[in-house]
Length: 235
Image 1 (cartoon, rainbow, N blue to C red):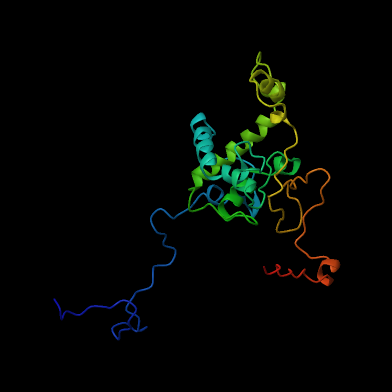
Image 2: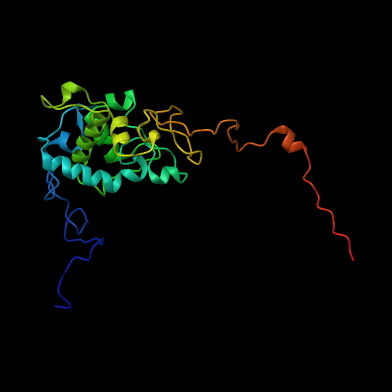
């Protein structure tokens, strides 16, 4: 068996006319599990444009799965309510998108799926962490978050009442600012987007009476020599 004829990987051979020991794959063959016949399910695109439908029915279990995956992978940046002020943003990371702006509410389902799959700006892709079905579940949950912040009486079942978040906060004894309609980011947040537009990202709040910080020295600062410490008198 040690001396039997065999092909060593990546080595040539004179057995075949093309000189290659590894034979080319048969054209149009697809590896098991990689057919991806439903292109919309795997890309979120229809004829090169972002679609706006779910590729499967949205059930309670789908929403629960979307909420679970969102809370694991999305909340560090986007927060539990999707306002873009997640915990690592509060610690100085670049602000994430606020799902509750008019522009973000108008984005299609396919847009959110594409961003999760391929990333956008400072956001990396989550294709390795989230399989396609989970990405769609997260998309559905994001839309539910948006609806939760803009619910109207016609969106609920007959007889149910829509109560404002401010009233709920008051009943629960929460701070008055808990239900503010405008969210602000801490001053430590780094603001900036890849296309120099806000993209629904709020700017960091600047405390009243203070000027925004800048990393560029002023001409006066450049021309003024640094102070030289004087030596302490010797005893």
